[in-house]
Image (cartoon, rainbow, N blue to C red):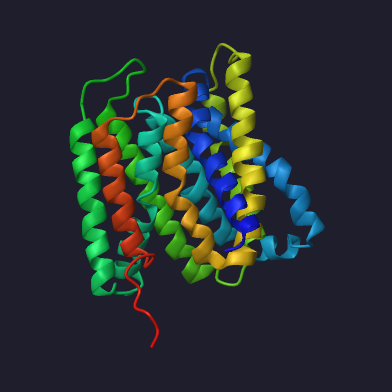
Length: 295
């Protein structure tokens, strides 16, 4: 990996780690669906010129049904679930549970696509989910917090969102192989905006959110979706999907750091230890560790 690629990988991890910070700031004033609508609608406006510039409109129209499914499972619902979770648990913890996405992807590929994992990867799945259980057990209080959401419900929302990401990865592999990544990203944002428009209208806050919440929502859309997707596509082109996906291991580190710096969130030893176990299991399950050397 060249220095330029590594720098962009760090930048992407920093941006996506900040998304959990922005959700923590904006969610109490917006609510789940209004915030998701602002995020995906503005992201669509940012990315749409790229679709037109690259002449991929025909590809979007051809595959719009499958892309709409991706929009629901990869943007609309997971974004709403993580927004709900941000009302009860801190940014770092949400990001750690988000990092279980490759574990869910591997399990679903095993059950759905019959892609049986090798022994080392199966061990990684066991280690990763053991870390999830240990971390969740220590945080899963049923007592509702300030916003009426309990930590247990928030953790469940994070894991369900990560599960949806895993389903989407396998669905995309099965039904959208060969479709340009840019088409998938823009199409999914547009379809997500259409799906959440009505729930957002129904639940739009009676009091206009303050400027800080609006600022966080705009940054969530423009920076964490628009700019982040551009960086991600560049990394896929230069490093391939596997190399670009290594950003998963860096996002929790930045999310914990941003939460500590700007929201005063103090990471606990249990949180750091559980996160380390989850990331170790993810590295094994995705083949990042334990690969046999070629003879």
